[in-house]
Length: 375
Image (tube, rainbow, N blue to C red; front, side, top):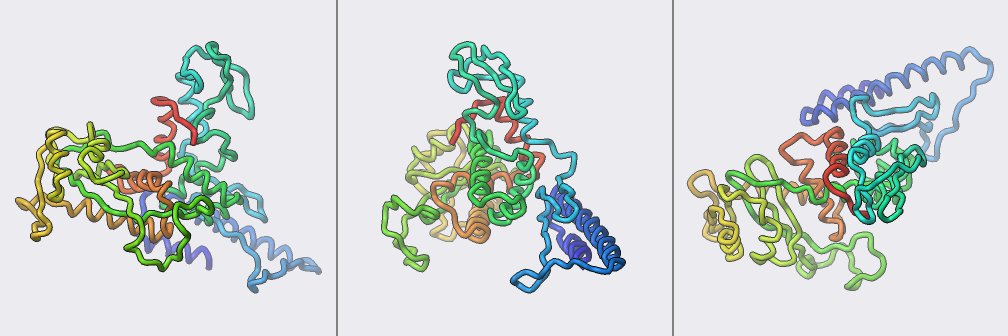
């Protein structure tokens, strides 16, 4: 019965990526193997005089183990390890190999480095300049994270917006650990914006309510209920610039001035690009500073499209999807972590299909091109 439900579930979903289908097929084969093993155990139990049955749980059902697709786990009966497909590169191995190509001291940035033995299976290094010892993760956002063998599975869940509690349950880890892993991984790709926006580019701002979700002490305002008046809540402006090839640059603004927009978009928009935006003075000043062609839309007069091709409907749709994703999947996020979720959404809705293989490579490449800072 469980196998048939999973098979119908896979057949009914046509919008999943290839990587997600592979993960579901892997989980399906595991369930099929588990059910055959349980049938054999029942046949053996019927042959014996005494049969041991596990008592039902408080909910009235027999205790079973559920495996989430793409997550590594252990079967309580067969102790068979559930893993991702072998084609997915291992995150820890990739990081160690990238760092070994050009090791650099996290303390003084010197490259006069020597090997310094192994600890917990990881190569350690010694800096000949400042005498510091370190490994590939020292001083980075992934420092002191445990259970690296489970990182790939956790990243697989993040490719389809897995929430904290299901991930923590699937791995047998603490909820705080699940939260820590999410934001440590997102910190690595936090500043990975599109290198350059070309062609027709749409620019617009949207507002998020200021949130202190999860904060219990040091609130800058009195605590309030969820049903409070939304007009009295503080607003956080978020800028999104997106071209027709789905390349995105976004950021949280201190204010909606031209200088603040220029801080995020300087060097990110091609001079040959044509930027569509609302008729705001800040947008006009930005166009003069960066030198791109500007198509001004006076939406207050009902002007939605210019010359049949210039509009901001794509970036507005991106705003709607972003807000539905944050409010629907995560039930809102704290403002202090909003940049992480912007980076996560950029990858999910980017020009390249977002899968665990790409996620692993993106994180690993940071050890080749820049030295990360811990959070």
